[in-house]
Image (tube, rainbow, N blue to C red; front, side, top):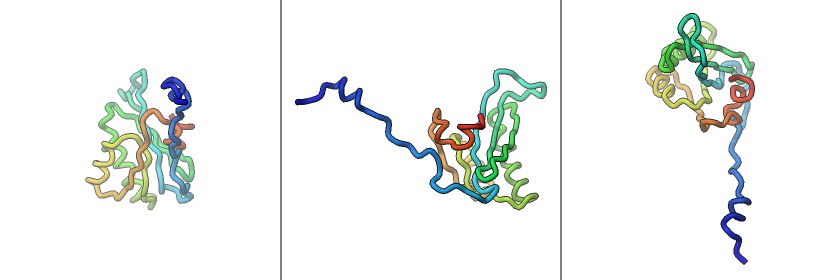
Length: 133
């Protein structure tokens, strides 16, 4: 006896997706979760975008406010350099949805490994998707 198409569709389920990296970092500054959000309103300084970076080990949050989405490359790279030069913390992994940031970090030779998540899946972006934005 064959199942009808509607019965087969009704029994389908979504494939399990990894919700985050298998090993959690305990070293501050090792892995960052990042995301960017558009605000309904423009700030007094003219910023329309909010960029949030969260450290996996300490859950320390860093915010950047941007006038244009393309400004994230310059501001975030300068932030990464400040962490490295001033505080001795070298970021090794970044978990995000934005592929454009990877080319900027490779050009600057920061040696960062990017881990990508699917858009619209906050459960994959770990700390940021659950508590951040």
